[in-house]
Length: 110
Length: 124
Image 1 (spheres, helix red, strand yellow):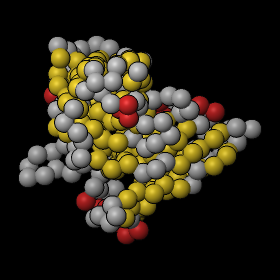
Image 2: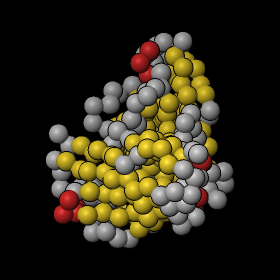
Image 3: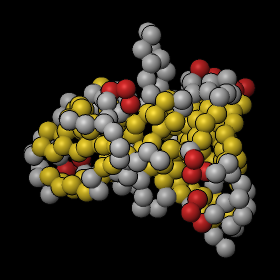
Image 4: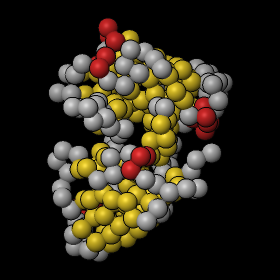
């Protein structure tokens, strides 16, 4: 069974930079998995941030960027702001109409 | 406004059945593939099921063990999730989500529109 791994939690100082990662229990994440990232503020619906590894969704500030780092997908927030404090969910496409989410990363800005 | 609105959640006893609905607004529903995603309290997102724009194919997460069935009615701009044999661990907020369309020959595999979710609580 495919397991997508994310850091359970992370903290960043206001104005700082943080990189969250998204890996596979076995194997490497590549662009062929179409990695996407979703931000979910407390009590809110998920919001699409990044898709196809590094494309920002409409209206997403350019302080959010996506990439492949080593064998993982990565979401980097540059110049973190207080309202970036959210859960961040990574999703990978396995093909044939099957997707898998990671467990999510709770980001604290303090 | 482009929108997805889920309904049908509620309190249900273990072993019971429930049918969730998701109504789409302000876009051509039949042109989009659709999915269901859930989130148990305090947990991450879990992809559940996919359906093609014309009603097929359908795919499911292995964890569902054949208990859930996805369907759609394009004439009514509606997506459904029939849930049978419900268990306590099915307690979650259930979201419908739209898969982004191919544009100019480039196809995507992310979800570009989410509903607000409907809460299903399985408890005696």
